[in-house]
Image (cartoon, rainbow, N blue to C red; front, side, top):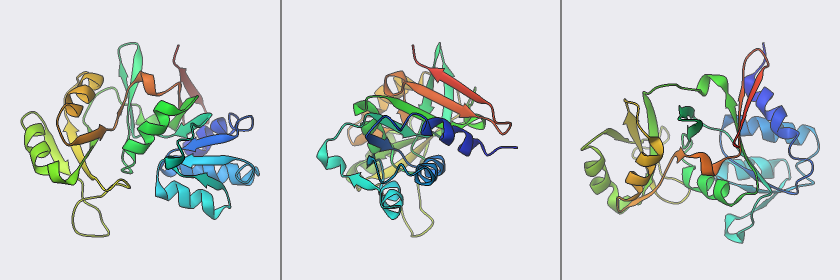
Length: 227
């Protein structure tokens, strides 16, 4: 048996050596990639841009060079993971934001030269239920929750380390919209972002990725490349 996280991390590792500016996402699978980069001596020779304070601190702990997003640097390649991969038509849609970094992840996805998303095959879902993270400015939370509850169940995400809502690295509140029926997620993304106070959603449509890589416990890889 193989660890699927290591399987996909090793795939991503092969895409890094010829790139100098690397974008990194957030989560346990990305942590596996950072560990692999460190083992192969690639952390100190590259420059990184990260989607969260968590990943920035991890890379820095290995003495990797991390640039602030305020630099406006566009990574040559961006590698991240996902919470759910959902087939929609002839393509796939991802749901991200379990770690609360959806806005910065989407920012780096949009502005990077090549976007690769890696994860376990068990995250491929053919139908709901699942949760869609939504980032909102604090002053709007009651208004947004009230509007979204007209059609969906929605929860204000709460943390374990303190009482109250989870606050993103941007100072915003994270909601989790509970999706129980199949629908067009990209259309839902557009509808949610028309609500004042909604900053971003965790729905990643096909214009935000180039490759989705799934790893299985038997060591197999399935690579979907956008045509």
